[in-house]
Image: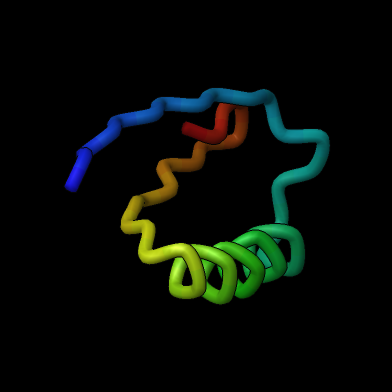
Length: 48
């Protein structure tokens, strides 16, 4: 079993509850399917 760490940063094009909820829903489904864990750190100027 291999363990990898990936850090990705981007600048949000919009910062509201609807966009964050959409990201969370998609990430939960895809991460579960691929057995990936993670976290999302978000501010008005960056997603990490």
